[in-house]
Length: 409
Image 1 (tube, rainbow, N blue to C red):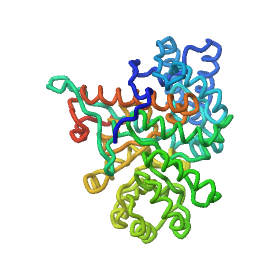
Image 2 (tube, one colour; image 1 turned 30 degrees about the vertical axis):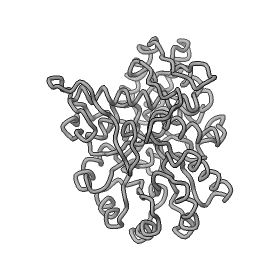
Image 3 (cartoon, helix red, strand yellow; image 1 turned 90 degrees about the vertical axis):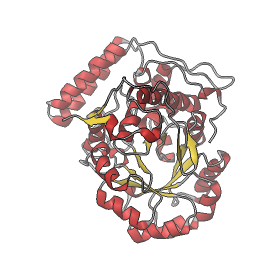
Image 4 (cartoon, rainbow, N blue to C red; image 1 turned 180 degrees about the vertical axis):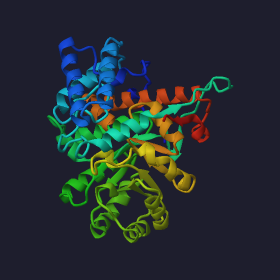
């Protein structure tokens, strides 16, 4: 796939953590945010390590608030968009569904119902975060790698780096103050395409027919440069839409079994019916991964739905290595879970993934900056990923293996 020609595809020079900070807000606002993080952490854990973690986040936020914010290269006719403005606007539009915390770890939103918080006490969301933080990158500097190629190919689509938009559907447009559906998918796909990678369209074939058709038309308009994700509706309903799904030219069809189970026989029926690759999303055990091989699917996604379906699951970074040990090289392995930087992308690839899916942070970028916000965020991740490759001694994505990571005790 060729990189988009949108001016937003240019990579801005930024400090690595700038996009993750809410900006230089008034001291009172920072104080209120930090107190909320501390109190939420205490409520979830009854004190202890989560409070220490929350305190560290609050201190880091204050220390980094003065970091100079970069500006994106705008789409034609638009004013430059700063990273600080993206997150400020995202907070305004998403609150109270999402507080756009400096560190998105599921603590401040713990116990919230609906939206993008974790289910129940929010421990699955928090486990995704803490498991990923335990992964360390092995810094190697005595080598001749001075430039890395971050691009890769998935199902015949060349992408600028191994990260794509996670499946997110129209329900996301009802968060906080909301966002028009057309603008949502325009940002999700257009922004990712401008950064040289793939967007996503999350859907449910049980939605009103005109709505499903309109989203498939969006895919056609973007020439299939996005994945199409279906909720696990009964097979007969999914198969009714087969002609239009195939006609949309989607990069692949993702079946969201972390929203509802399917049997091996049902998966096998879908694989046989569709010409496009089918990826099963919601795999968290080696046993289920092997069943996907049995069903003949084209790929799997190691995911607990961002911790939003079942409380108290392990983090995806905890289960990924064992699954990769059985499936690596047989079919592509996707994963998600608190991905916010290019360093996180490299961590997941070191644990055995082939492609990483990015959810909540793209959502914030879309609400805060539309197409340009998403393009800025994805380009930022790509730059971080490329630099991290050089500093771990790998020149291409195919060179990445478990030697680039270690797991802290």
